[in-house]
Amino acid sequence: LVMFDLLMVPYELCGLELSLGALAVIMGWVSRLFWTLDMVISLFTTYEKPDGLEEERLVLALMHYAKTEMFLDIVIVTNSWAEIWAKSIITKVLTMLRLLRLLKLKAIIQMLMYKIQSEPIVLSVKLLQSMVAMASVVHVVACCWVAVGRQPDGWVAFRDLDGQDAEQYSNAFHWATSQFHGGIDLHPYTSVERQFAC
Image (cartoon, rainbow, N blue to C red; front, side, top):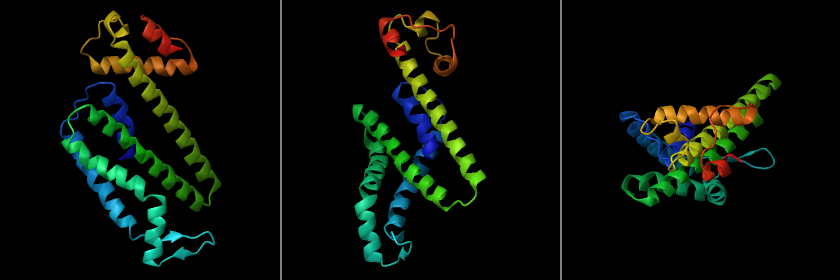
């Protein structure tokens, strides 16, 4: 669910249309219900104390949750449900707030890494984390490059790609990837594009 948001949020914010149809609606509801249920379950979840023992007293576990992750969960769940009714510029702000879920993912990965006892598995997970982080950065840069290129006389118009979102994104992804390892024949054409490319 978090990876779906990581892919879709930059795509949506840059104005790209992706025809997922029913999948987008289903994923929205699955995500909304999952995070709501996660918050309810977290109210009754024990936690590990600094001495390594589990705190099983419900009141203390609830107080610990209130001090640590409850505010973030309230923002995430409220945002998920508010997206249904918001139909304006606020929608873009609410869409960006979905990325707060990445903070929960980071905590889950840290907890799993703490429990893994195998060095090869730890190294594999860290390598996978680095690859996903790199791909995520390239994805965000590509989405921004599309948004910048859609300016009048930008690279989208120069390459005659108006209305071809998939082709615009694939060109932008190629351009963003090339910024890490070498050149490409897609160059900035306007001053805004040149500033972004720097």
